[in-house]
Length: 447
Ligand code: SF4
Image (cartoon, rainbow, N blue to C red; front, side, top):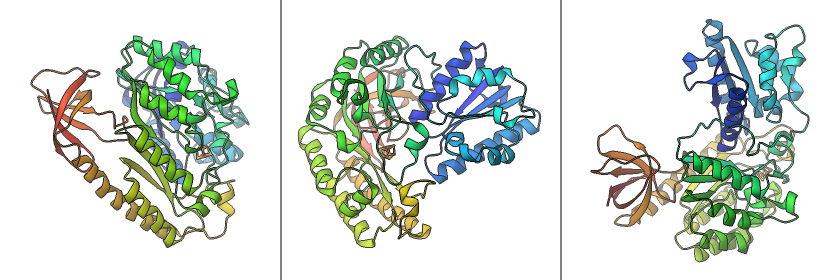
């Protein structure tokens, strides 16, 4: 069959989608980027919070319409949504009768078998395949059909999470933390470099804990060192680092290992002591403030991306004020803010002091507006600087290209609008001068 894999949610799910597409190709199917040309669509879902689940269901219903109209033979749903709702499989099967099968994130390699069986028959449980505890971990031997542009890739260094944050259901449906070996990741990086990848973005639920399960202690600095030796890789970027495991060695590795960009994505979630304790974040406000100071002083020009949650149960206006004041002090280059979402079977769901949705939204809007101003001011400080830009793609205007500096992760951060008299191929690093700035983006001239 011609299969279209539609990946929702974050880069971690995208890596799963790439493995899934590779497994389907190996089983004799072909992958198409166009849903209209597909015989079969697989929706790899996100169910991180309620809004993500709703988006997943909306997408499935849209694709189901194609099937009803006879333009599609098969529709499968994979990933976090079926895993999170495995206790309600009958409801999901009833709600989405057009779906031919559901698979959890630990069961993706079973899809070719499911596609080989008849469409849904008398025994619906056969078409809802979710392991009680996912243990699957793709490695460098897993075939991979990449869904990112040729020049950058995500490298999933670990799966699952051993933390127990009170608001989060991810460990329930992604399983315990498990790392790939350093050798396997270096092998993977070599394969990617051979395909033309110049930027590797390291992902996992908890990247700074990398290696603790395999080697008895976190070994991210060593992994960075080894990946830096892979020929052809110009940038290595660290995403999803838990603040509790950011050590002096890791800070040193980011500062000193040349292809590791001076960038860190480190979800902090809040700065107030009581809330951090209630969230079970294994850090307090003082540690978080110190960590950000250390990153700023020890890694010159570091760009920090973080996320915060507003409206966690019990959060007061004064605690939001505290967070806002600190955001003004810490001046993060990139911030994502999420309204708290009460997730099933999490401790926070049953906590007293649930904040009304309207208030959560207001707090979100307030902090987003604040961050918008900060980001704009930070961008203005780039004016006149000479920087290295990675070219992503040509824009519609001739002579204009889209690219990124080290401070921009693909798909989530800002962009550089780059003017050049010379044609520039995607994946090329170019020296450029910043000549203008906008709220989140930069305008530059190739030198
Ligand atoms: S660190 Fe906390 S928020 Fe992140 S995946 Fe693990 S439990 Fe969830």
